[in-house]
Length: 134
Image (tube, rainbow, N blue to C red):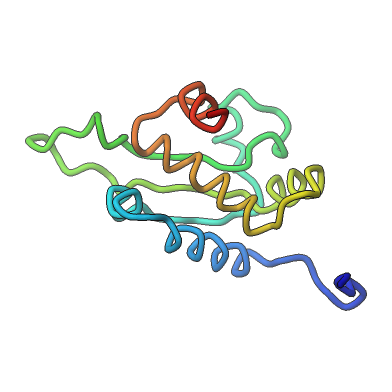
């Protein structure tokens, strides 16, 4: 059955946040529990400062970002760490989703979310790519 797209609008930031929350809630334990109190935020694009820090000119290149001290680098005796945050960028995710075509939007959002949670656990992009390849 084909979806009638005639009267459908692009998913909003709130729609994305709901899909991200559902993807997070669907993570198996202990993965979800170890992610802790990570804060999820959805924006249309990364801000100019973030893009400059990442040395990116095209805002469509960045679908998500982890910001915080990864779990393995935290010092329980030091000052309290700022809350860990995961940013999901709606427009780049929509663009990547449209390019792939064979996955649902929920699957694409979950993929980006899980990638960023990997950074929360201290994994590098290469580590995550290797895990995904297996």
